[in-house]
Length: 313
Image (cartoon, rainbow, N blue to C red; front, side, top):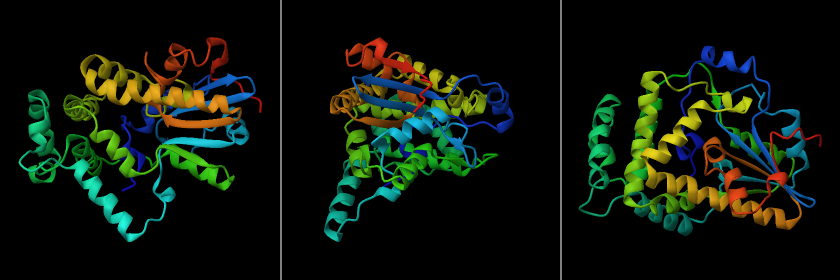
């Protein structure tokens, strides 16, 4: 059940390169990048969005050196290439559990789980994107999100070829013989996490997608590559809006997960080795970001958490 990050992640707006060029030509700093340290132990944290195929400007000398010196890589979700071989019985069991987690109980539909506002908003987009009711009615909202998201991208042609930075990092790590670890090592683990979200958060997940689609219509996507210059106007707006308008979703996919990552960084720092984390940019933005949680939970003092470090290697 492994899928591309665009589907298993929280896709942000992507605008034509003409809009992006204004920022990329004048950037004065590197990407969204942090260094947490404790004694000799170090954890590097890179928050990323999509990148353009053939353009590795985000892979700055400091990030290259940090990655080279790291003993391991951590990512959110394992790419398809990392999926472990399963015997037929295990695959059948896993697929059956995934179906249970992604589908509504008999007698209940996707629309029953939505709040009235979400139900009213999603129907016009379904019609616009030619998403049939029968395609989403049996699904839990967290899984219906990806059906609607796929429909949108099937109708949308980008002026460039996007690439997933996490897959690039995975390949770089495997080429260098580094072990790769995951918050969600397979699609089933991801499904368990998403299915456990409360009903209100499920409904708000659909509204999060609809907010993204609304922004696209209004031309509010911003520069898709501004994360490479240490900024993210679209990402920051998205996180702030989620925090105020979609609080149940924010608690589930931002606060709780960022706390998990902060505690994982605590473990990594206690190991004494150097690690590298690549994660979607929303998790390093806003007042409850991973860097904020590291300070709030007293895992790393301010003096041992550096943003955009000029790491010499």
